[in-house]
Length: 157
Ligand SMILES: [Zn+2]
Image 1 (cartoon, helix red, strand yellow):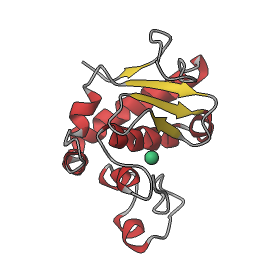
Image 2 (spheres, rainbow, N blue to C red):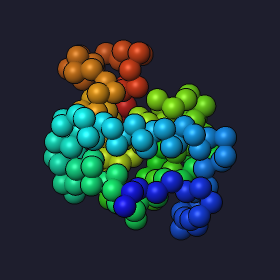
Image 3 (tube, rainbow, N blue to C red):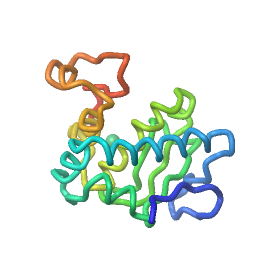
């Protein structure tokens, strides 16, 4: 079982969540493969995800075929999850335009929301990037962004 990418085989109940356009599919597939490699090779990733409210590991989320990764041409941000704990995720055109590392970072951030990480002022979702090796502990501690990593310590929600 594997978390699913909407390649035209899923009709999301969320308005504006659509199939990933053909030109973006290689980056979406790369991001999912890379996320699985992180879950296998980096114990801090599963450990961090288990601390989130729904207590599922990154490995478990990536193996959940009821989670769908969609595209959205209309959302303002990098990505969105339909609800805290929700299973419909959209990755926005902005993320795809930045490239595959931003798609990967967005996927990890949104999976944290699917696992119960709150929005608002909380930084729990974005902090998952550090546990996944996509940001530095120093950025987290100092609050100063290193533009060479996808993690941004100033992002909340
Ligand atoms: Zn968020």
